[in-house]
Length: 352
Image 1 (cartoon, one colour):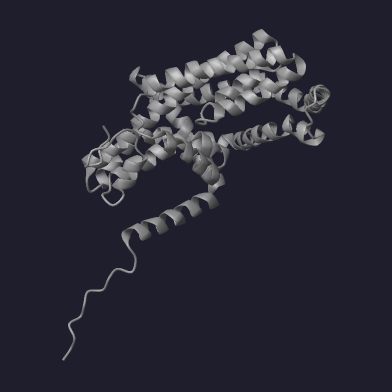
Image 2: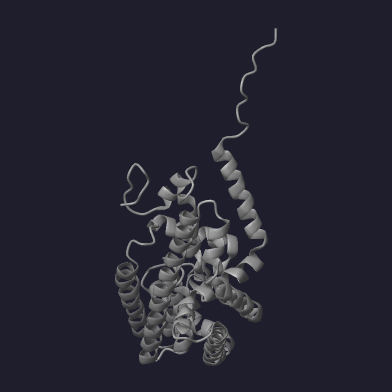
């Protein structure tokens, strides 16, 4: 007599399969990071250009002419920034050894004073603690990553151009191929609106932060104010730690060239600027619409920085928002989206 066959248990739970798929996808992204970074940077440029592009079309300007205007605008802005900042970068790089020697002399003088006061500190450890090399190496890695991207700017602009051309037609294409067209279009619109909101507000606040930093350093007589203003603008896109990293070189340089009083004023100025734009204005302007917890924002910074490098750190919040919205629309992964969310949630997983 044949035994009644028992239903076989699945070899792996859905969670294990999801985790395995996640590991494979991340490994693929890390392997293709150089190409993926170029695409994401092109997408970032396209998102920034969406509003002026569609505004030109609403004014009756044909799509092709609007694209030409946008591309010319990007090139002009890039040329102006390169002209203003390029000389400062080269000059600062050439003067860096002299600044390090001056900083070492100041730290040695302070160490001698502490020794005379009865406080013993190992000389090498003291000098290394106040070296410009480590913070500048981190900033150099970030600048180097962007220099590599700018060297491929033609390809990036071409990708951004095609993204802009397809932007208006993409919702209709998505609707035609989706099994649930209304839900798919709603998801796409939510992702689009959240990214536009974040990128637009963050770009505006970063621009004001960079201008404020440049004016502060110009008034205090710190060298290369435009360079440090641009650095503050770029690194302000990195959540939590970007503004801190941007302040280190200017504070150390003011300490070397102007002394302790100016360095304290520069530090106070950075703290005030970041409090106004980062702590006070940014939460009010962004509000709760992004729906990511503070812990997740910080962890996403580390994660995307590991996967994609410095550019991943800049794009960590938009990328995490896309992942969160995608996870919300599948029952098996909805719980992960709830964990990523900020605020309280109901039993259905909706944030309140």
